[in-house]
Image (cartoon, rainbow, N blue to C red; front, side):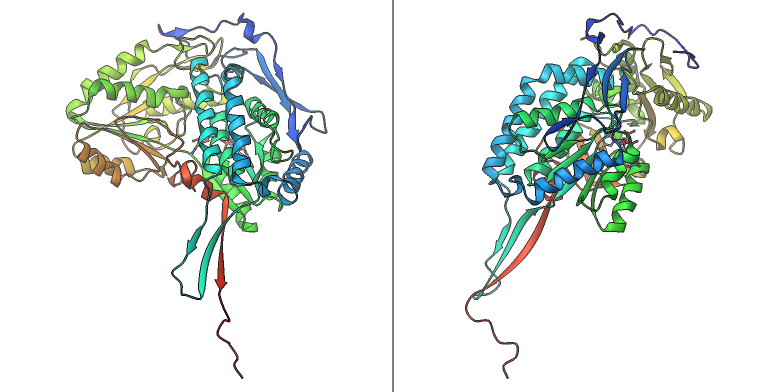
Length: 513
Ligand code: NAD
């Protein structure tokens, strides 16, 4: 690394990456999956991914798709939808193949976890857990795929019957970010193909490998050609073509507000359906009666998980003034001891930042917080010689108008604000343009529930954080997005509902003359 503008501090809990690890010896090479075939970009261009946790080590190489490559994939998905077997299969047949995909994900879990760890820089143990969680997402969606139904209305008159037919939306372009490539694709692809759609997935150019592996696993499991295509490349042109091409019926986007807004504008011009899962600035509200050990552990997990590069990160700590010092002491103790650094080390809990530019951005927020008058209680610096790491960092004395309280830092940086009453806590929690997630910590369930009811966020927890299960919907209020994924709700995103009026007997004449 040529320059090191960030402070180098060698915190005691830093695990320096082992650059001689045999798992870094050679990059994995990938091809895109279009119409069931593994292909390179027509230009032959590739993108090389350096492990963010292991300086100088290339760990993945995938094609750089042009707009033409993406159009071929859209054509394959269109053909598979319009003329292929998938949308016409029974739910039971679709379910059988999807269940096989879930089983094959488990069979390939170690291989997938290693690729996800190296591309994203997340701890290997975390990556393995995520892959197994994804197998469960596929299993749930496989079960629901044969339970999808419409409705009947038998109450609209003796000579009439109303039917609501559920139909797949069509060809779906799915665009995913770099922080949880396998999870986010597993929250979208099974729900869309389970509804009978066909898909073109465009993962982030930084972390594309495991999405290709997912599509290969699906092919092995017997998914018909063209149902699940993967193109790799940059947002513009690869992602944007999915929104612009009139042959896609829907775009499901997960990523930044900036790009999500742009895609929604493109989709609006064609009146194309769009799903958006965007950023967040999740509050963690801790009342004075909370179990402070559990809350401190949850707060550390909530902000440090995936090095804070998590849309549902609990990055704003809103704590009752009476327990603030006590709680912060416990959070600081964890922050001092939690191992961060080498993603390949089994002990590591906090891995790498995704890129040098992003590390600098997080550093810039910390500098801005200091300049605004907030106090760094621990951390605040980078360890960026052997990989891109940022120390677990806690701010106190944060005012709600500071950028570290308002903007998505996307790093292991906690901003602490005190409150005195539940009303004040709710007002602070809702004082955000985002509304993706929120936590409440309290032993009083009524207080916790009444608080959660008033918080504007799509994914909430009481006495936990970043919990997830296939059954419950996820999605955003306000600028955090449109639409819901997971659960039974997720299938509705990828379904059209057709009302059919059936008339029995001879209908009354309109023109009797
Ligand atoms: P990003 O918006 O930069 O990129 C996301 C995806 O969009 C990538 O695949 C990228 O290549 C693509 N893209 C970029 N420009 C495009 C364009 N013009 N047209 C089409 N596609 C384009 O986001 P990121 O930096 O990869 O991820 C971080 C952001 O994602 C954060 O804001 C985070 O909160 C958000 N996120 C949200 C969720 C959620 O579920 N709500 C989950 C994870 C991440």
